[in-house]
Amino acid sequence: MKDNALIEVKDLKKHYKNGAVKALDGITTDITKGEVVVVIGPSGSGKSTFLRSLNLLELPTSGSIMFDGEDIAAPHVNINKHRQKMGMVFQHFNLFPNMTVLKNMTIAPMKLKGLSKEDAEKKAMELLERVGLADRAEAYPSQLSGGQKQRIAIVRALCMEPDVLLFDEPTSALDPEMVGEVLDVMKKLAKAGMTMVVVTHEMGFAREVGSRVVFMADGVIVEEGTPSEMFDSPKSERLKSFLAKVL
Amino acid sequence: MNFKEQFILNFVTDNRWTNITTGLIHTIIITICAALIGLVLGMIVAAVRTTYDKNCESLKRRGGLGYIIMTFFNAVCKLYLTIFRGTPVVVQLMIMYYIIFASAKNGLGVAIIAFGINSAAYVAEIFRGGIMSIDNGQFEAGRSLGFNYIQTMMYIVIPQVIKAILPALLNEFIALLKETSVAGYVGITDLTRGGNIIRGVTFSAFMPLIAVALIYLIMVVCLTKVVGIIERRLRKSER
Image (cartoon, rainbow over all chains, first blue to last red):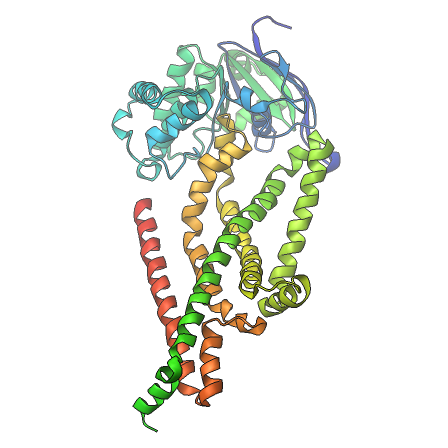
């Protein structure tokens, strides 16, 4: 056990239909503070399930997830408290369509952390400034482009000041010309020392920004290492054939 | 007899028009009170049903009493919906009046309860449909920010649901208004029975029944107009 591990995942399993389908079949890994872990793998490999298990949007069948000194995979854990420290960014943004951008960002800090409206909005505006969307504060999600929506979704998660951000294929639903602006925001975050777990198909991003790349297939981690180890000298056949297809 | 004589015979003589006005007042009282019961009870039933559907897995995992209680209440709600949507409202009303509240003197109260419970079954399904129509991503986004299930419902989901179901809900209340016309079966002088009483006295059916029909029609058309205005407003705010 490393001292600076933020999340320790041990033998995490997720089975469906009484074990007939094994989405996750024993995942063990640590996520260290300040690390950018990029999870890659073919579709159906369980990478999204793994990510969603980290904040218990998927309930694991067995195994443990140590976060903040507690096994959050155990029953009777107050997961809501922990989720406040684990931001999540979804493939389909999931902004609240009936609220302005500003309301989207301030509702959680105001209701959950008891921030005053002024403080929450001040913080939200600072974050909007950072992603270049301060002028859209009063817009509704339907008036934004996909790239703008995703950048708002990222800063919405940041408003809760999480210890770690989970990205579930954040650029997969975007038009190609909008992928760059979202990845730029993520790069900036990584540089600023944010701990991130990113499920993505953007190999360029994985290589450039990832401090560690995890390759999953059939619900297990097949290989993991630094981006250069993984992309330049892959060891397993599975990874070699995967990279041959996607690069 | 010409039109004028008919009119005087049916409505003016012996103040027969009061049958219509008394009936109208009762119809309106029953409709409004039953709608309120329907709204509150319907929301509760919908809450039980959706809470069970959405949290079944995590409740089961936690085990214990919570899961058993929720399963029980969910089954009760399902049975309630099946019975009250599966039998005619007149039959329900008569069962309420002649069996369940057989000793009650207040027919109006029994009718309010009967129509309220009946309407709640439909309102519950409207609410449930509305909640289910909200993309699951909205729940997940709320939960991932740290809201618990109830907070996610209150702050994120329900505001979107109300917007989506308001027209359907108002239409249900318009249907309720018309359904109360069977209240006469248990001796309440509602609008329909008021007209029928006049017919029984004057032996002329045309005037009182057409008058009753016109009053229903005017009320329904007005309410439908209101629904239309609200619908347009909602669409506008969607941009």
